[in-house]
Amino acid sequence: MRKVRIGVIGPEDSVKQTLKISDSYKDLYVKAFPYDTTEMTREIIKEHGQSIDQWMFSGPVPYDFAIKEGLIRHDQGTYATLHGSSLLSVLLYISLKNEDNIRSASLDSIEQDQLDSIRSEGINHITFHRYEANGYVPKEKLIDFHIKKYESGEVDVAITAIHSVYQALLEYGLPVYRIKPSELSVRLAFDYLRQRAYAMSYRKKQFVMVGFEVCYSTAIEEGFVPYKIQHQELEVNRVLLKFSEKINGSFAKVGSGKYFIYTTRGDIELFQDEQSIEELTEHIFSQSQLNVRVGIGYGHTVFEADEHVHMAFDYARNDCHHHIILVNEDKEVVELRDSSKTTYGQRFSAENWEEKYSDLGISPSQLSRIYSLSKHYEKDEMTAQELAVWIQSTERNARRILNELERSGLAQIVGEESGQRGRPKKVYQLQDPF
Image (cartoon, rainbow, N blue to C red; front, side):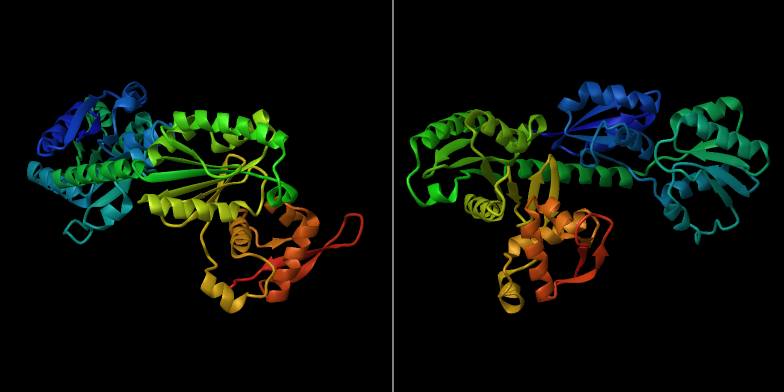
């Protein structure tokens, strides 16, 4: 099995310390990337990002810089946390080195909760002046902060976690000390990165079934498929065959106008990094003049993926305008539309539905979708016109849905919207269903 590749980014002394600790991890390949300034993180990741699975940063500053610059996602790296114990060891060193006890210190790069955690450790006599901002801060601001605090007489010493700040203050002549993560903190960070890398690797190997279904008119669904449609389906078949090849899938046509591709989550996500499924459906339409609905099922087994892709089709059949539905391994339903994701759970189970809303003329999936869109748009009050836009339906159908919801107690009229021609529009408010 390939070793997990971890890149260590930070000042040279911190990187060396981290590498020594990493020697005990035989299943990790750890590569050092020392820098002189935090900003060098940008070039390091851009140059070596493709060869590294996870990034270990020397502290919150380079990690926050990488996140803010869009160099990595949150799930691609971490850092060794500066715990209160690290600060305690520095304070002990200062007290042993100096005969006089310090009364105050300027401090950066440590969270307030970690500072609070050591308040009862016999250091209540020390006043800390903490730089309030967390994460990446240009070193010039931190240097200026420590110098001003010292020269104004507010602090006796400066304590920093940033190597470049430490060196600058040392050259300036300030009594400055550097705080570093403990060995335990570094080991915890390595353990976390290793477990996450294995989890992501397993995730990529999950089974995925991608189903495509041609949207026929009702007349065609119930009878003979004309030759013209069959010729158009040949174009659909051609496009999907190329798509299947691109995602290393196994392609199968099942009946008239229905296709399944078996692949892995890693392959489908790799495809989506370059092109969205929505763009694929648009390409299918441009080549064949046929709309398709798409169901995507994730699963730990083929059976589970198959179950989820059919569940996705049940949701997708509510609307046939490039409707793309994904059901993941947790049975969470994700609607992909307009290159965005709208997520909703299976909130209305069959048992609850039969018990409370058996006579409602709306399906559980449609109702789940409405509640999900309400949450997505952070709006529980709507008119029929607004609902029609949400669900890409006619205003007449949206009005029917709202009337059904009102009748069942799932919505109530809270006012009217006037100011336009015609009758005022009723404003409905969704109610908690359970």
